[in-house]
Image 1 (cartoon, rainbow, N blue to C red):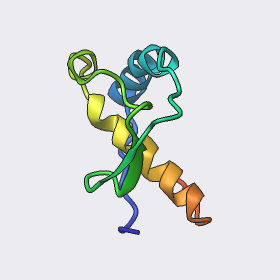
Image 2: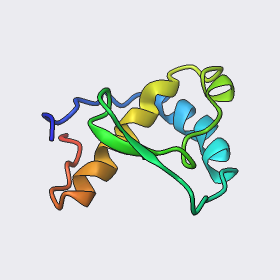
Image 3: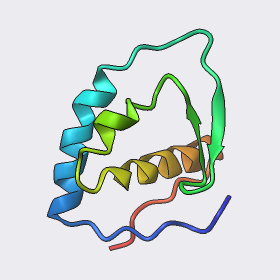
Amino acid sequence: MNEPMEVVYNENCEKALLSISPLMEGLTRSSDATFLYDIFSGGIIWNDEFPNFGDLRKIQSWDIIRFLFHYRMSLILGNPRMRKD
């Protein structure tokens, strides 16, 4: 897996995550889901777990979602990468 992504947590990150959350909660699991490797996050993304991009890109700092996929990939690999304080 790629090197850990550096996260600068600030108020914009929290606002973006709070805005993305309802989009994620509205997704429906599909038994036919496929996945791809996202080079930007270093993680895999199933097509039934990614919100409509048209809706997502309206959110300022929407790309914070990549950190979620990166962290989940570290969990899958058994090497959780926590934020350093």
